[in-house]
Length: 306
Image 1 (cartoon, one colour):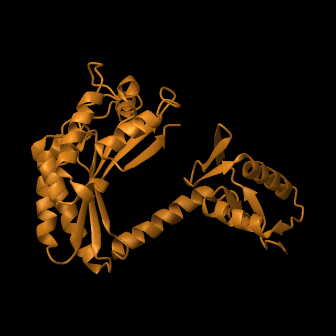
Image 2 (tube, rainbow, N blue to C red):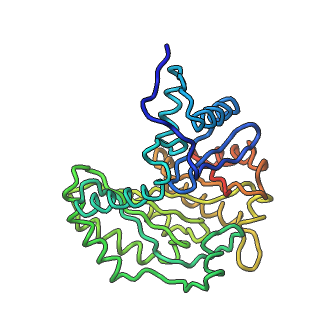
Image 3 (cartoon, rainbow, N blue to C red):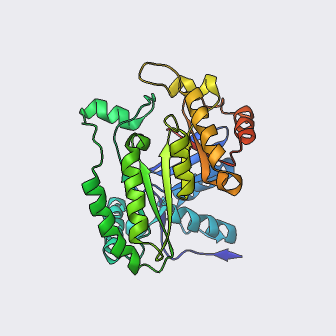
C-alpha cells in the first residue's frame, strides 16, 4: 500500500542529535520534542528529509507514514507552514497555557520552588553554575507569597472537573524550608477538605531526611523523588558537599528512614533519579540497580546531562 502526504515535510532547523552505542537521541532544541531512534530509522529520517528538500514527490509506505506522524508530534519533522516559524510556536503554546490557566479548565498542579539554597554542591548543578555566573542571590519563598498563590489556586481548581490535584515542592533543596512546606500542606488541605483529593510531591537529595520529616511525608500522601547517581564510588565523584566530602552515605541514610515509614504499597511513591554525565556514563550498572531493589525501590529514572 502506498500513501502520499498532502503537505511538504521538512527536518526541523532546530534538529540535534547525540549518538551512543548505535542509538540516536534526537531533539528539537527550541520546542523540546525528542525521539530515540535506532540506526535504520535515523538513516531513513535523514534520507527522507534530504529528498524532500529537493522537492521530489515522495511515495510513502504505510509504516513510513506512522513514523512521520510520530516525528511531527515530537517536532523533529515539521510541516511547510511552520517552516521558519518554530520560535513563534513557543508563544502560541504559552498563550494557550495562559488561557487554560486563567480559565482554570486544566489546572491541576501547583509547583513551588521553596528555596534557591542547597546543602549539596553537585558539580553539574545548573542552578549552582547560574548563581556563580550571574551572582544571583539565594532566596527563600515567603509564607506571604506562598499563601497568596494557594489562595489563587483554590478557586481555579474548583472549576476543574478533575478530582485529583497535586502540589509540588522543589528547590534548591526544599527540606531546608521544611516549616514552610508543612504550613502550605496544612493550609491547602484545610481549604479543599472534602472537595478534592490532594497529592503532594517533593524532589530532594534526602540528606536532611529524619524521622520527623519521613513520617510527615508518608502521612500526607507525598511522592518523593531522590537524586542518586550510582554506588558510592560513582555518586561521590559529582554529588558532594561544599567541603568536597561525598554525599552517598547521607543519601542512603535518608532513604532508609523514608522506606521505614513508606511501607508496602506506599514505597512505590519513592523514586530515584540518576543523572548520567561524562563522569559516570557506563558506570551506572546492574550493581546499582540491584542495590536499590534490595532496599525496596521500585522505580528509577535515568536523566542524561547533555
